[in-house]
Length: 595
Image (cartoon, rainbow, N blue to C red; front, side, top):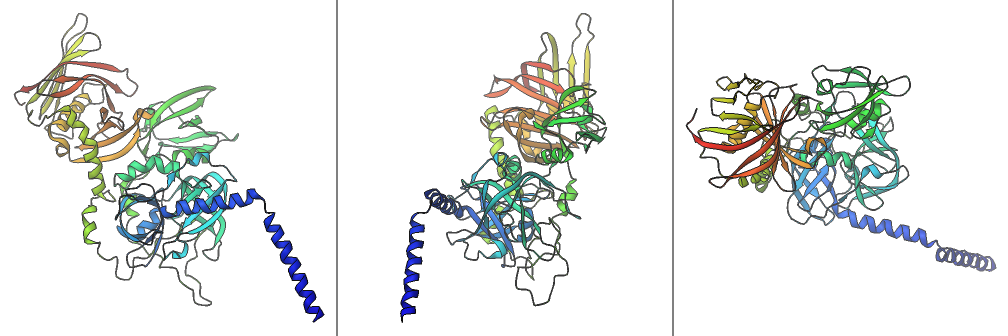
C-alpha cells in the first residue's frame, strides 16, 4: 500500500510540473501556433479536391477568383477529362469544366459552377520567396479528401529558381520552380503552395520520390505563381498554350558566363544582331550567369512576348528587344492530349507485389484513370460551356473573351455599310502627301512627285492571297495591313479564316498590359492590341509570313468622321530596324465605288 501511495505521489508531482511547464510556454510559440491555425482555416475553403467522373482518380486544385476559376496541373486534368467533379470544404461537390491548358508548363485552368461567390486564394509574389520561409501545402494526397477537407502539411522552402529538364518522352519542363521540403505526395498535384501569410505562391506538381515506391522524400517542386500570372490570360483564352524560345541555344563558358552556342539565322534574335559566342548579360531584366539561369527566365514567358536582352561582344555591351518564338509545334502540344495508359486510383498493394514500372525521380504524378468504360457524359446543364475546336482546350471561353474585347470597336461607329473602296488622303511626315485606296480586290498607294523626289506608286492585288508582297517595300506589307483594318471594321471576325483571343502581354514589351486578338487570312496574320484600362485599340502588327519582321502600326490619335464614326488621325509605322514613319490622315472617303 505504501508503494502505491508513493507512486501516486510521484505521478502528482509529474503532473504538477507538466502543468507548470505548460503555463510557462513561450507566448511567441503559442501565438505562432494560433497564427498557423488561423491561416489554415482562412485558406482551406479555396482548396479544391478534384475527382475524375466515376471516381477513378483525381488530384488537387485551388480557386483564384470568386467566379469559379481554379488552377491545377495539366497532368491532373488530362486524366480527369473535359468535365470533372470538385469538392470544397463546405461539403458540396461542384461541377467543373476545363478552360485552358499549358502542357509544357504542367498547368491547367478550370472553372467551377454552382455559385458566384466562390472563396478564393490571394495571389502572392513568388519572387519574394526565400530559402527558409515557412510554407503550407494543402490538397488531396492519395485521394484521402473524400470528405473534401484538405490535408495540410507544413515545411520550408528548400530552394528557389530551380530548373528541371523534361522527363524522357514528354515535354513537361519545370522552370524557375520552388523547391520545398513540405510533403507533396501523389494527389497533391495541382494543389496550392501557400506562404506563411496564406498567399498562393505556387502550384504543386513534382516530387523526387524514393526509387522503390511513390513515397515523399522531402524534395517537392511547385510551379511559381509569378510564371502562372504571365500565362493566366492565355489560359483564359481556352487555348492549348505554348512557352517561348529565343531561336538560339546557350552554353556555359569556361568562366561561368552564358554564351550563344547556336542561333537560327531566320530568328528575330539574329535579325536584331545577336550572334554566335555573344555573352548574355541579362534577359528579361534578370542577370544571367549560367545556362540554367537563362532557361529559368526563358521558360516563364509565353511565346510572342517581347523582351530585352543585354549581351556583350568584344568588351562592348548592347541591348536589343526580341520577340520570342514558339517552343513547340501545335502538333507536339496536341499530341500530349492523346489517350495514354493512366494510373488507377491508389489502393492497397497485395503483399509481395511490385508495380511493373517504378516512377523515376522527378516524374510528376501520372494522370488518373478515367474508369473502365471511359468518362460518363457531361451534365446536361454544362454542355453549352464546352466547344471543341482544333488547337483549343475549350473554344467556348475564347468566344467569351473575343466578345469582351471587341466591344471597344463599337466606339468607332458602324462601318458595315461602307462596302465600297476606301480612299485615304493625308501626309507622310511633315509634307509628303499620299493617297491610299483599299478595296476587296486591290489596294494601292500613290505619293505625288515633289521637287527632287519622283512620284511613287505601289499596288497589292488580292486575286492570289498567297502572294502578299512587302508593299511599299521596307514597310512589312503596309497596304495589306491597312486592308486588314478595313476588313475588321467592315465585317468583323467573319472577314478572316482564323480569329481568336490570344491572351495578354505588355504593349511593345514595356508598356501597359494589353489584350491581344489574332486575325488570320491566307497565311498572314494581324495582332490587335487593346488597352486593358480603356478598351481602346492602341495599334496592331501585320505579319506577312513566318520569320518575317512585322509591320507595326501604332495609333497616336483619333478623329471624328461624318455618320458618327471614328478613325485614326495619326499613326506610326515601324518595321524591323527601319526608321519610324508617321502618317497623318486628313480625309477618309468611304463612299467611292467598289474596286
